[in-house]
Length: 131
Length: 136
Image (cartoon, rainbow over the protein chains, first blue to last red):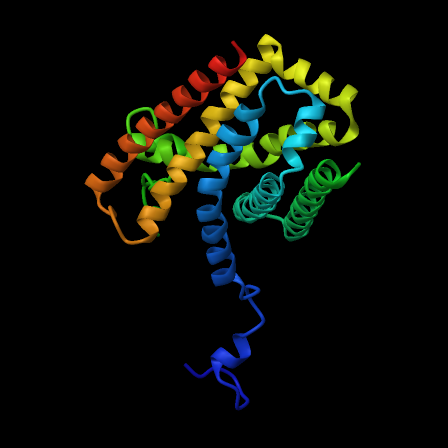
């Protein structure tokens, strides 16, 4: 399809103007984190939460000092926040219509995910490595 | 001068109400996936933050959070949390099955929906059976 003037193709002119072009990456990231969260989510409920029912802080600290537990916990929180951020972004893009409000909401969503994941990782490392 | 055309019933665009979610289970299961996902991300993560944060801040903070979760309301919230998490997990596996090109038929949607609900029930019962045995 040729419209207007100039030598650039319609595709060439459209590139970079519309969507950010990250849809495929968004889609695969959401599936990748979903696949990871199936075993990690089951481990979190049955291993981390149920396995530590009634434990005091000293027991949690000893449990988190196991490198495997700390690694799985960090994988879980990072995957969960990434997966949640990707999912809520789609919901916000679907339901928040004003351009400014949508951009602010999507940005706040990403900040929440980054801050939440970082805080959880710092907590895990504090328990695992802190004296 | 010709008289104006009589008003005509125009078709309405679809609205949530026309889908009759109370009669058809597929769209209900579909929107629940989104609702449970948002709930897990917006509210569920707060429990994880509270739990890990309290543990990292020390014995006093952790004892407080453990006490809150052990109240009847805490148990109720945790029970809801497990149902919501297992729903999103099991229905997520259902979505991954569809992504692989399997069960993308009306019959597949129905049968995987029932399998998924059975998984949610089984996982919830298993979690609470094991959990209540642990604290007993």
